[in-house]
Length: 228
Image (cartoon, rainbow, N blue to C red; front, top):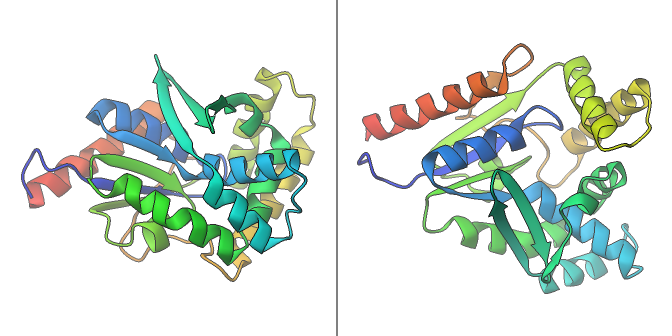
């Protein structure tokens, strides 16, 4: 693998493990595209609410997912998400959309509808994609797979701080309970459960700063390039 080979990098992990922040920073450092698959599932949940599609109706959700057009655009250091030419960045980060994403992603029809699109976005390489099943299902042959994790307490602290910064009044224990419930749903679902790929490099971010985690992943990128 040559040094200028444009890799496909899969970053997985549970909520608030740092995967999104780390994946975005790695993509910017490498000059790669970044694909937030979690935002895609959140968008399906959001537009289902707007169009009165039940989160438990897999077939209708799949039809909706297949009809949406996604665009990720950098605005300085901020990644903005557009769906059908509407910016939905802030709407997607609402806590209810985390629950929605978990609910709609349980349906195999929805995952199938988004899978081809996600693989297409990564086909040329030079992409960092994060989610919960990237290394296991979406890009099982990615050149680098990283699984980020952190303790439940630390992940709850991070999520709580994020919500407070956005002006959402919610208690820490409620955030922790919601994260634990989503962990359980995602790990136990029949379709593409949350787990580390057998060949993923596991990185515990509980005591790591974001810059340190980013540097650790960039070092892995250089290792993959050197091994080639």
